[in-house]
Image (cartoon, rainbow, N blue to C red):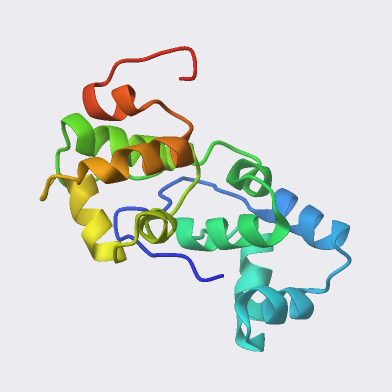
Length: 162
């Protein structure tokens, strides 16, 4: 499964070591670095990246999401530390801010959200940035996807699910 890449979602963490989590998950699955490169990234050229990541190299959120999806684990399980995401470049307010942070908290990609509501990824990104108002029919779908209430996305009203 290919995941969306968002320029605002790049890991900026000092000493983010993927070695403990990535190597552990790869060995638990009984895969070599070469097999992981082929099975997860569909080409053997990624073996050098896997060696670098297991050795403590930095990775983009896209990569961590892809590996977490492949192993069916959370992003924190691979990083073995808190995953810090660079804040969005544009100031967000209201529903755009709640869409963005709810998506990040639910570990979903923009592409997954766009597919769920039947729009392209750039259109969904515009909703998150606040460039365009989101259609009312999309709110219940996204609320279910993020495990929040409709009223939280619309007005910021919290309930016991947050």
